[in-house]
Amino acid sequence: MASIAFIGLGNMGGPMAANLVKAGHKVVAFDLVAASRDQAKADGAAIAESTVAAVKGAEVVVTMLPAGRHVLSVWNEVVPAMAKGALIIDCSTIDVESAKQSHALASKHGVGSVDAPVSGGTGGAKGATLTFMCGGEEKAFAAARPVLENMGKKIVHCGGAGAGQAAKICNNMILGISMIAVSEAFALAEKLGLSHQALFDVASTSSGQCWSLTSYCPVPGPVPTSPANNDYKPGFAAALMVKDLTLAQDAATAAGAATPLGKHAQEIYKAFDAAGNGGVDFSGIIRHVRGLSGK
Ligand code: NAD
Image (tube, rainbow, N blue to C red; front, side):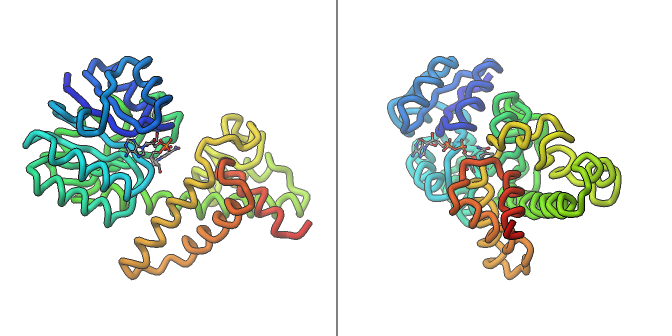
């Protein structure tokens, strides 16, 4: 079992750290927020006074933070304090450029590094069923895998530095676009007098089939576990979808890739967020889509 420092104990990091404790690792945790530290302590982690104190003697460091600037700031603090040959894994969703910069910092200090953003949301974090999309050198990935297996079900090595972040934003761009497509189809069906169940029964077994329809249906009924059945409580909040679509657009601009539907999806989710719906599940976008018809 490893000695692991875990920094960033929010909605995702808290339960992920708890799963590492459950797996038998010695976990030393830190977060800026006292309530998150208290929860981690109740979950069995030791609590450090600071980021740097948390990583002292750690074989593996895991960060789970809001955005690229937080990751760079924390890695700049902790990487120089880590032992040579130790490993640092960032599970946050951040921009590809910051991910590459953090890998370069680790490499400069002789520390192995992996970018490993997740999909699966807070349910996956609690249930240890996350998917990890990893970027980094083969040796670092091989060292990270057994740690990640305690927090997730599927671990994919996508390529070199930043490849995990690239995979994550490409996937979530598909998700954002497809949820709007499915919502538009239901809104049109409603106008045409077609029942939700009839559209679902046809499209879920036809060429319109996709995850946004069959696992996360934006209308109540056909998929009982989808947030639509629970007044669109997240799940995956619309504000996070705006974040990921914005990361995708930034990457597309930097790389010179044309992503017109990704751009439009970003605009639609931004409008939904600006109307006070940032905390609503992203499948609640169907309400916004219906509203666009003016009735
Ligand atoms: P969160 O805001 O709940 O947690 C982030 C935590 O980081 C907070 O507790 C904050 O206090 C802490 N933090 C910030 N700066 C810090 C510092 N300098 N030192 C120590 N702690 C610090 O966010 P979350 O929902 O847990 O998401 C974390 C990451 O995972 C984000 O990048 C997000 O995009 C990604 N993600 C979230 C979900 C989801 O459903 N919530 C799903 C997939 C990916």
